[in-house]
Amino acid sequence: MTRQDLRRKLQQIRRNLTAEQQSEAARLVADKLEQRLSNRVPQQTTVAVYKSFSGELPTSAIIQKLWQSGFNTVLPVLHPFAKGHLLFLHYAPDTPMTTNKYGIAEPELNVQNVVPLPNIHVLLMPLVGFDSQGNRLGMGGGYYDRTLAQWHNGNRPNLSPIGLSYNEQQVEKIPVESWDIPLPEIITPAQHWRF
Ligand SMILES: Nc1nc2c(c(=O)[nH]1)N(C=O)[C@@H](CNc1ccc(C(=O)N[C@@H](CCC(=O)O)C(=O)O)cc1)CN2
Ligand SMILES: Nc1ncnc2c1ncn2[C@@H]1O[C@H](COP(=O)(O)OP(=O)(O)OP(=O)(O)O)[C@@H](O)[C@H]1O
Image 1 (cartoon, rainbow, N blue to C red):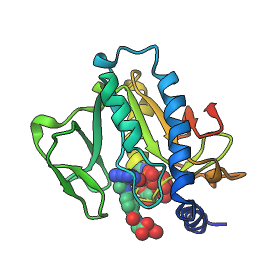
Image 2: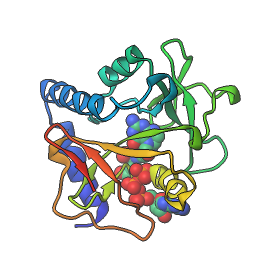
Image 3: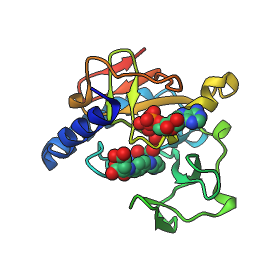
Image 4: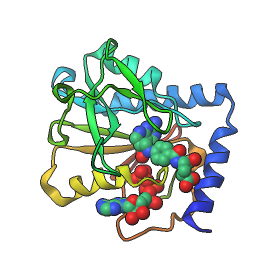
């Protein structure tokens, strides 16, 4: 199966989960994430989250929990000039928001709110699919691929990328491309994978 066929199939599976299945999965993932972050000082930890769309593992409860504990959070924003690249902007309850070309909510672009990757400690990433080696499949824009490439260069030792996914997104083998960088960790409702 090609990556595109696999992506379609897995997105279909994801969209067919009921609202109850989605929120139960999100609750289980939130608990595992809380444990994962329990050794960190929230005020000194910046977590990149995402605004879930199109059947992704819901993040609203996770974000509320992070805020309650005092973590700093940032959201991905499509780079205005560098095609295929992401910026990360501060995200708080009162952040003015806009909608990007995919219909995803993102903070209004404001240079003062840009947080450079070296200042981000945990990068939560939505997955379309993954396998038992930590290989991932995303929405196909290469946005997180390019972010991970900066991490993989070795000059971002402080960053922990963590994929979030339903159990149902696991497949036998993700067909990998030369630019793919496997994830060191994935959290699903059933399991905390460390590769
Ligand atoms: N919640 C969330 N925010 C995110 C991402 C994400 O995956 N999830 N991104 C992570 O990259 C970036 C946006 N990337 C996206 C890339 C493609 C499509 C999309 O809808 N593509 C079309 C065509 C793709 C195809 O099928 O070939 C589609 O799926 O209909 C959406 C977002 C930044 N923000
Ligand atoms: N490090 C990189 N530098 C330049 N181009 C890249 C890089 N990584 C990926 N790309 C390009 O991005 C495109 C999409 O890649 P791919 O199909 O792997 O998306 P994906 O992993 O599903 O998406 P995402 O990373 O947004 O979750 C490909 O055409 C690829 O050429």
